[in-house]
Image (cartoon, rainbow, N blue to C red; front, side):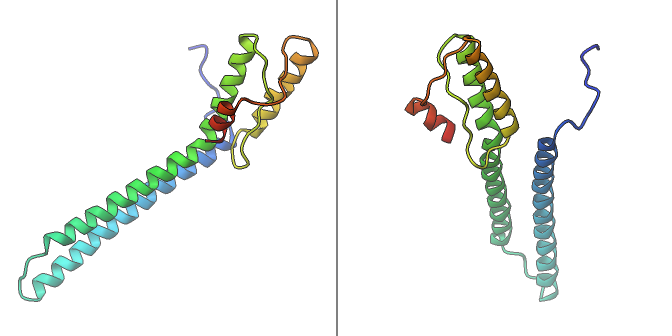
Length: 151
């Protein structure tokens, strides 16, 4: 394969994203094993207290806690990934506008977004294309683009 990548670790964002995913896996595993351990202790405690059975509610509570943790981690992941996907969306729209010969605005990202170095590169490209007369730079973004960029 002539297009095979030479390096596995390319960029610091890869490290950040990998660390976040590993944190999710570790947190979920710790919660799962803690719940299993708690059920086992509760079960043994109930048996030594006269052979009573474990309440089915205890298992439901454990399941609810694990599902709640999964929902919270999913919501956090989606919110976190917006910091990557939002800039990519904005870059794509800008490149499409340039390719179609439409006026473009300089790319502006939110405070906590990633890929700011790429934003600088895109904006330098826009400046160069404007200097060559290949693109017209508009000074303000339409309201729908501002809303999309901020979401």
